[in-house]
Amino acid sequence: MSRAAIDIQNLPYADGDFFAFEQLLSAKEQDRLAEVREFLAREVRPIAVDCWNRAEFPMELLPKLADIDLVSPVRRQGYSNLFAGILHAEATRADTSIATFMGVHDGLFTGSIEALASQEQQDAWLPDIYSLKKIGAFGLTEPLGGSDVAGGTRTTARRDGGNWILNGAKRWIGNATFSDWVVIYARDVDDNQVKGFLVDTKTEGYSASKIENKISLRTVQNADITLENVVVPDFFKLANANSFRDTNKVLKVTRLAVAWQAVGQQLAAFDVARRYAVERSQFGRPIASFQLIQSQLVQILGNVVSSMGMMVRLSQLEDAGQAKDEQSALAKAFTTARMRESVALGRSILGGNGIVTDFEMAKVFADAEAIYSYEGTHEINTLVTGRAITGVSAIV
Image (cartoon, rainbow, N blue to C red; front, side, top):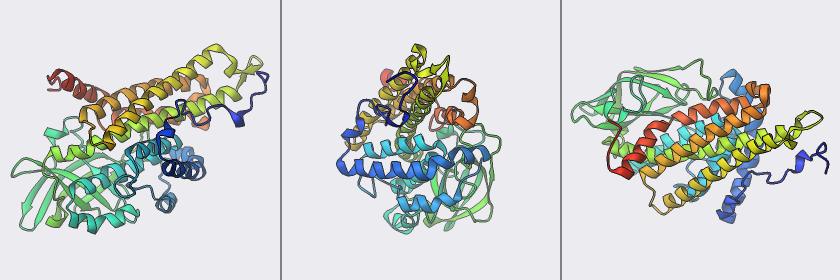
């Protein structure tokens, strides 16, 4: 085949899974992954750039997401954590914003209910959550509290007879401009412990305002939440959310999911950069024929493979009930660092076209910055890992 006649429809290693990690999935899981991948290609990726440019969430997509039934693949549907991770990577590969919407609703919000609510509470709430009849959000981060929120939660909860009274503010809360419910984590003024509450967003005293002017995850509707004497009946206090240690049970799993997002983001960068390299001609031939371009593509691929290999093993440990917090922390720190390099290389391959969303890479590049920071910054996750291997905390 001449260098000027590359068949873009039949590129080798079309799925980017260079070491065939997907073959570790069961036949049933591989079939389900193919079904979801087709859905993402048909319903999500074609609208992703336009929604991102307008910073608007495609509400018309919600019934379709409900139909494809993606919520709680492990606990409810019986799939492996490995399948759930690869699925999350595929959703990110199609569009990071939609994957983040699902990560908030499914991982953080639903995960809080599954891990910390009583059986009676789960029976009352989960059916509507699983079916997306009720959209959820997760309220932990605050205007003045991010990495230190474990010991510095300023939002308060005060017991008042059969109710709790919540006061405070939350920031960067995904889905919160249109969610039906939000799990709010607040410090009990009586025992100084962080506890969890399911709050109906129509409750008096609750308000949410969209955060504007973002350069990353623009489709995600992040909000500032204000709570002014919000009354929460005692039944809506999560029965098993009584300290930040309990909250961390949710965060360990979702940190793993965000590391899988870093894999998906790199796959997206590889997809876009490779196709562009094959299609774009300079000096009379495709730029894919130049050594430096191939070197950059191989570096992206190497980053993907190393990140994915780490995540496959960590997911296997999670399936075996052996995964540790520090392992999730290292995974999140490592994969997002590789992701940052990968998207930068991808943007470089596209040259000037890499800074406009018309060619998709600009969105991939910008969205990586949010993944790099949320669910624990690179620095904090590094120090969590450092504490585990030295026995000495350098965080405070």
